[in-house]
Amino acid sequence: MSDPRPALNQLIAALERHLEASSQRRGEDDPTVVAAYEDLADAFEAYDDALHDATGEMTPLVVVDEQFMVDEEDSDGGDSDDEDYDDDEDDQSYGGLDDEDYDEEDTGR
Image (cartoon, rainbow, N blue to C red; front, side):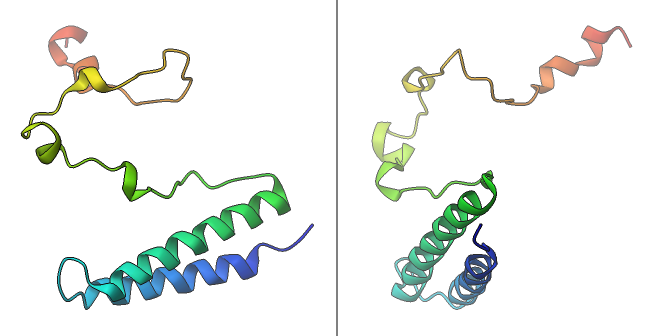
């Protein structure tokens, strides 16, 4: 079993570089921030892989691929359409309770 600690140390260093670059950002597409973002994503994936190889465990985090991100205002004039969302009914993940589940009127209090 290999030790994931070196990958963790690289992840921590990448987080610190990203924070530093973000706090000194010069514009929307600052190349320093973009590079720090990419380095952080790579360091996270390396750590997640090392952790899984060493322990069989994974973090609860994922790296968001910008090519799949959609700006809702650009895509449909600003209206969010839930009909495009494909909810897998077999999904066993916990999504939390809606505020409506705990309305005082419904509980009789």
